[in-house]
Image (cartoon, rainbow over all chains, first blue to last red; front, top):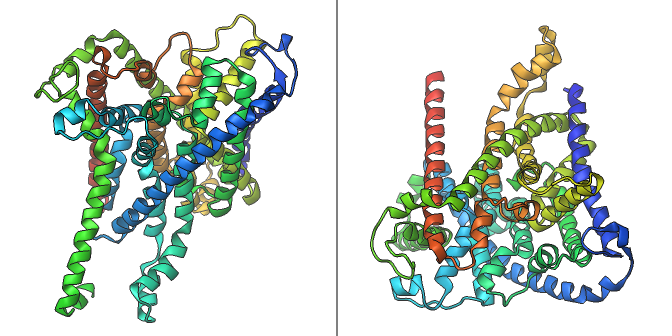
Length: 270
Length: 286
């Protein structure tokens, strides 16, 4: 099949252009005083770096909230994946489809539904008589992240758990290990690949998204995504936007390297 | 084997097992509830007979009719659906050829190609959106007077972020193929293109279909990248929803919920029918 090597080339060129050139653009824009995309009147400057601390502050806030959300997702997702893989369901795909189904609902609409729930006076409190009132709090944002991204933690972990050979676990039991010891020394190490993928698949979109923090945060919570969106779509400040986006790109590249190490074929990314 | 052990367990252990099983299924139910919670609200809103949406006033199906009368919503749905179809078709074709190419590379080159392929998968949507927007701004700089942002810029963006998912779902299927099969086809007198069409493509069909399904759902659901790359008033469904700050103004929430319920049920039906046909076909073979 070596004959089809050529087929990879156009795709790779297309990816290199669409990923590489914009990064160069962004690095250039970070050093330019420019109005929108008008290069004719642009000149070199370092003034954008003065605004970088604001970006870094938002970056750490995003990292913190996303860390909490990822931790909760892991705490809920690992046992869930374990239960499904160890269960005696005749059709495990059905269980997985039950978990995939919510993801076919538009995410923005689901976030808006949570907004309706989080308000003190509104649909939820009037209908069910429970006033939740957490609109605009960090709790609302983290809860939103957990509900939206929990399936992304369950699937990669389930995929690796399902692949573990049952005879390994039986062997461990036959050799006298207690169930907890079997889990810690056999199952857990074998599932770390899925855990890594799951953590990255939850952590990155949580930290970099802007819709959850904008809709559920009620304008109180400025995460890095909100700042980038604001700079590019409203303030038309491409330079500062590029500079702050580069922070995100560094984080993404780091994650790519990790994924490239633990899962070179990208099996757990779907 | 398992059954035999379970029967001979002492009573105390059986009780403990029962408690842990109850705990297990409570946990299972809790997680499913958590994931489904927004859907419950959406479904309730879609049949809620209340114009303000502030409480549940009884069952109605009127939003399912009224959604067809809202021109803006219909326009955005039209854009969303046609774009998802085009983006899926094009990214499936592109992704199939790309993954066959990537599969034929040497191991080191393949790793690098997959790494590159994963960039849009892992990248923050907002940054991917910025990437594409900057490229399109660059194009409009090169060709003055061109109107870049609109339906086609959005379609281009969708193809860009859908293709990597297609590649990821086809590659494992290519790894499963016995490479002798291809050589055998050549020995039997096939030209390489023919062998590709008659041997390789049929054996990765499942991956192609799965990739297409993923691409379709990614495209139909996308907000951030479309938001960054669209323009001139071209809105898809997510952007239309986002543009309405108060969810109940003009009954947007109820109408959107109705549309969404139709889509979810529709996709579910397609999947059930697909699985049903596949199961029947399998039975026919064996």
